[in-house]
Each structure stands twice: as C-alpha cells, then as structure tokens.
Image (tube, rainbow, N blue to C red; front, side, top):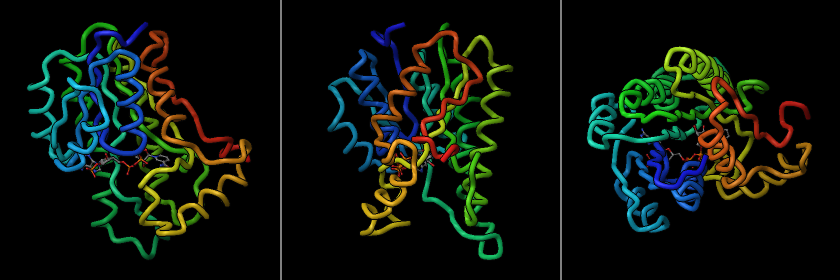
Length: 239
Ligand SMILES: NC(=O)c1ccc[n+]([C@@H]2O[C@H](COP(=O)([O-])OP(=O)(O)OC[C@H]3O[C@@H](n4cnc5c(N)ncnc54)[C@H](OP(=O)(O)O)[C@@H]3O)[C@@H](O)[C@H]2O)c1
C-alpha cells in the first residue's frame, strides 16, 4: 500500500515524533493535515511541510473541537495520534491530582475522543495509530503517571481494534527519543541525559524522531496489522 493520494491526519503533528511522521508521510505521497494546541507551532510546522499541507489549531482535550475538526476535514485515510503535554513525573506522595488529570486528558482522553470522532470519516483501508511508551512496560520510580497512560493506551488500542474493525487500530511504543518533551526534565543537560540513557540501551543510543516516524508509516501501510503495539525502544525493555 502506498500513501499516494491518501489523507493522513497527525494530531500533535507540530513537533517531535508527530512532525517527523507528518514529514515522512508527505514524502511518501500523502496529503498531510497537522494539528496542535498552538497556532504558532502549527505555522512553524507548516513551514517545514510541502505546499498543500493543512494545519489547524485544536486543543485535543476539547471534545467538541475534535469533532469539529473531523467534520470539517471530511474523508480521510489515516489518523496518527502523537499529542502529549509535558511529562508529569514524581513519586506518588508528591503528585497533584490536578496535574495528573491534565496529563491523562491529552494522552488518553484525547486519543479516545479522536478515535470516536474520526471513525465515521475514515475511508475503507483506513487506520488509527496511537502512541504509548516503554515506560508502561518498564517503569522506574516517579513514572506512575506516564506508565499508567501507556498501559491505558495499549489496552485502548486492542479494544478499538476489535470494536472498529475493519478500521485498523495500532500503537507505536517508543523508548527515549530526542525531542522537546525532555527539555523541561533535563534543561540544558538534555544531551547528557541522551548520552547516559543511550549507553544503557542495547543499540547504544536514544531514538531520533525519524526512527519512530518509520513505525507509524509501516502501520499505516501494512493492511494486515491491527491491535499491534510496535516497540521501538532501542532495547530498553530488555536491557
Ligand atoms: N520523546 C520520547 O522520548 C517519548 C517516548 C515515549 C513516548 N513518547 C510519547 O510520544 C508522544 C509524542 O512525544 P514527542 O516527544 O514527540 O513530544 P513533543 O515533541 O512534546 O510533541 C508533542 C506534541 O503534542 C502537541 N500537544 C500537546 N498538548 C496538546 C493539546 N492539548 N492539544 C493538541 N496538541 C497538543 C504539541 O503541540 P502544542 O504544544 O502546540 O499543542 C506537540 O505537537 C507523546 O505522547 C509522548 O509521551 C515520547
């Protein structure tokens, strides 16, 4: 299956893994639509994407806005969900449930709402690809929230694959990837964090957004994949 002439929507496609996926889908012949919660970021992303790419400011925690986006788009072929706000890290005693709810709002409820409102617009052969993470399989202290959202997405993927068939629903499970997600955690020392984490991985380095984008393209294009969680973690779970 080629992506020529297909309409691919990347929710959270203005930065990091989502932007790399939007760029890879466009290079594979798709017409791409990106969205995120900031108009400025949408415009920055559009500047890196081919003419004809559409971009919309949509806060994915607002179900009405998600519904309006898909109604406005009409027929589409694939939806990729890579949106995620800042990481909420910290051991249980230190967690504010307000912050926890916000984190799950984007990663989990946003994904559910996107699937709910996208399904009627997906053409035959269409797919939805969600995003989880290796922290769900191998959490360390402080990752209660991140790991929980990953677990929820893995189960949601399988449940949606069954319920929405023949629409295919899969998920990508990255390990650590070099994106702005880590800036608030590592600050100016992000490079040191990538190097020390990379040394502990079987492949000797952390991921690049392009490594992970290839997985979304594979899942969009492989008509036999559904309910799958594709791991690209450099061996994190095994190391
Ligand atoms: N990077 C990693 O190491 C890694 C590892 C495992 C899993 N993941 C997961 O993979 C996903 C993508 O990560 P990333 O590293 O590419 O993150 P990123 O660089 O921070 O990009 C996140 C994207 O989500 C958008 N977003 C955030 N809140 C939103 C909202 N309320 N509505 C709409 N869009 C929103 C952001 O745009 P705006 O800010 O403009 O809204 C941005 O486009 C996340 O779920 C992350 O948890 C990442």
